Image 1 (tube, rainbow, N blue to C red):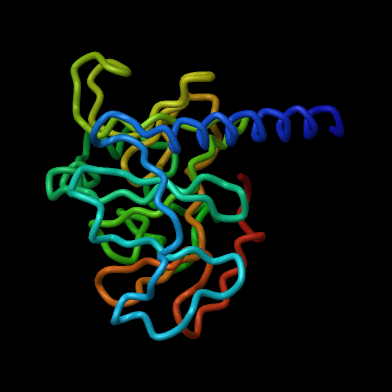
Image 2 (image 1 turned 120 degrees about the vertical axis):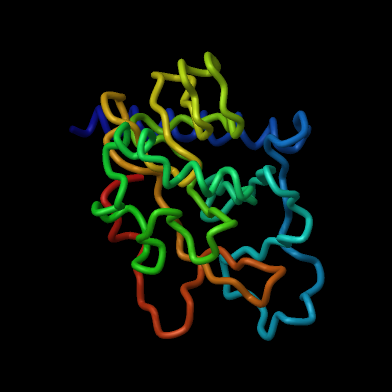
Length: 213
């Protein structure tokens, strides 16, 4: 068990470092960008983020795009989903291919246990670490007949061992990854800012209680 755990941690460190490098350099439109903590608070932001939390400006994310930040050294995907993407999340063909379509396993806070796995349907907040061996899944938001897999409806594909997730981070059946991508604690501060690392008021969700990261 010790050797397996060590290997997983090593893979995670390598994957996180690789993603960090790619994000700083930048990427083709619609893929990953590094978004720093806000330098100035939005007018609707009432308090400074607590230690370790990260504020992300949602106004900079166009529909269909994803940005990436780091929280607790983990890559976090923040996705602005289109109306078409939200409709796909309810597609019966897709739901039949998912291992845990109703998020019954504890991989998210209670306020994100829904079809879109988020507080605001248009915005997804996901830990970008494959639940198989800690690699970073790649963002393929557009449907495709062949790429990165046959009859692709949009989502994430792990280049290490072929695990697949939809645009809500729900894992497909018959792939190596056993669980959905984790959803970190987060809350929306007005309409323009999401704070990662802090629960909404009166919610005591502990991220350490999830099944696996």
